[in-house]
Image: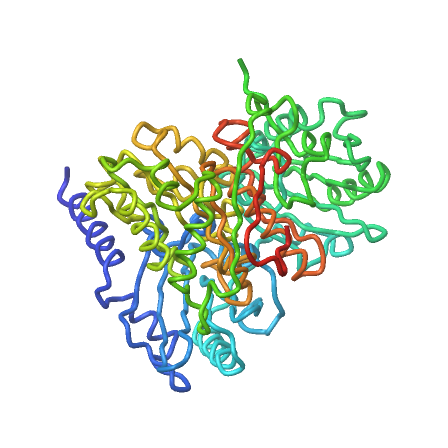
Length: 300
Length: 297
């Protein structure tokens, strides 16, 4: 192996060791630049902690899969304590792209918008928001009026400290606002996340992976809910293959190409256009399913 | 033979995406139905004094609840006699606990179980309590009997963290079992170092978590003092009963059907696909003891 390659291996190893340990390094500096060490009497007494996609489960139980599925790079954790008060924990997920920072934010949309960062929610002591390359969760172990104020203050501090905003996935532009509730949209890559939000199949019949991009949104027709799924593949060949796979598994009894009435008397319509496939689930009628599909195809 | 793909439509066909159970059961013909006629027995015991004024487990009451539950479950006249049905004095016993920081099994329950095992004649050095270290612990490595005890909670990836899922630490690579919402967790129970060793499953319903948020899937807002313990020799039966209680609480709290997300299908697949036990409430004999207020089931 050439000397340069050995050097690369060494640097990756050292980098890994720094991330696995709690040695103050560049990550602490990043945290210091984004968060104060003290706020309203709460202090960061413990050492900051750092995790990577390999050891995330040491810190977060099953939900670690979510962050891995969004290609997170580093997790930086700072715990704030104040005697006699609940702890407050700040989790900073540094993602590989702003699209993924947005995406992981859309995984859990429960809560009120508190206008922090580029999008935010607050619920039961938990503030979540994204900005730039970061998805941030700040959590009070017990919610009180006082901890809520501290959590929100920390969030505002961090949002201000992250200088650059990030772009949302351009796939969102293809969703007609009249068809989908904007606050219902989940952006993701893989099969596990799709099934978390809306079970389609136990097998990965769409061939979703880290290179595919998908949005799932909810719309309403006469008060009844339907789902709209849009997936973009790296090339048209892959999109065509996934479309055929879906048709074969999901609608072998299609009454016409890409249209079927399902067992609950609702309608599912599917189409492929270039590198994208579009599916409307649970439409009230064949006409509305086809109408929505046509509108989306015209945008694609 | 090409594997049959299961789609949403299969569930629509059998109306099995159940908003009533908030859970999951496989359509007829897809899951094997070998266990159809099997029955299981579980005991739910509650005591309004199970927690002290600060919300901590009350040691005396917890011991009494466990003693009574095991005695009734095994139809014996006293707890020592009942534990002797489960455990031999020569057994090497691993008590599989759960150390999850927000809602652990806890020392009170662990020690109550250890005391009961010792009362059955097992020497202290032949008992170990562990969670993450079970694959390295010398007692667990040689265990002839396992006692499985953990709190019930909703779980971000598997729908529910219960007795079946508690054995995920018996594999060296737990994350490899996360596929399809942890659908096949029951397989772990058939691994050579686990199979046939579990003598009792204790699903703690003392302060269950019925909804989760954020990376840690926890908020105190969604924990309630149910003050119950579920006990059975069948891990599927305690988990399936626990799911029903969690779902009932969610219905009460949110004022609408709010199915678990994702559905806890590993519990139902544990019966239909892996034949580990019984998930169908119609085939679970549930004996309810103690405090009945707000029992939800």
